[in-house]
Length: 395
Ligand SMILES: Cc1ncc(COP(=O)(O)O)c(C=O)c1O
Image (cartoon, rainbow, N blue to C red; front, side, top):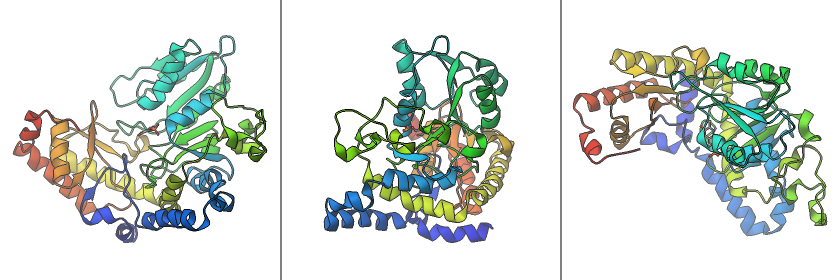
């Protein structure tokens, strides 16, 4: 299987020059993206304004359908947007606090961009927040999450995989609890889509959102919003625009929401980003997330063995059932050490509290993992990072 996956390496130019262990941040660009972006420019150059009617206008939903296959969503349940933060704002704009049901529950380890949206609304006095504390900075305790969700809870924004530590949350248990008390779940699948198999339909979440920058190798500007069909005709987003109208080209004075997922669109879409995202989705769909996950579990387990054998502390969960595609290795001066690794073309990053994040993807060779840990060992043994450290290197 590993050999079969390695044939994909030729499709990613950066792998010729770097050990690329950062797909939790920016997935490698597929070679086909050059063609996709050229196609975009050709269409604009040759068809001009007719491009809108010949596909561009529909693209947030047609590209959404391709993404939907990766997250186990039916066709016409995904609308493409710029990013997760916009999607969270759009979802929240569908709701008003109703009596005591005005609480939003999330782990304090959520991605900041997500928390900031809810904090801003809480500051304006519209909602109450319950931030569930972490004991170790790595995991969001399930029992505490379940206990915080009660009859006063309106929404539960939930990272499927936590960005810092790759801790994989029990989305099923949390969704069941939320539904039991009448709350809705917004699953942030940014760190799981493309590396952990799941189905939003099976999990029965109300919304899901993420972007294409990371494991999907789709580049920036192609965020996605899944809305469960049970909500399509019942919600009226206040973050909206003319694409959400049932007849946009009537240019009517008042908004009449489109049926279905189209009502969750707003203004003109970011067409180049949607062209760019396609090649990543096609590759992920062709390989299949099950196969990517099998390779990821094998390689992340191997990475843990290598790191521990070299005497490093691994902070991400050891049990693959509780982790996504990333391993975090805690070393002193992680910022400066990371900078030196990157200088040596071992591309990774670090997050305070968790350590250096290392992520094999389907295009990673086993030898590259060995190389990365070896370089890490050498850098620390020789204090090769001290120049960066003295310069106050942050990464
Ligand atoms: C879990 C998670 N959610 C959201 C984001 C990004 O949010 P946005 O699309 O608003 O930039 C990231 C990483 O950039 C992430 O890891």
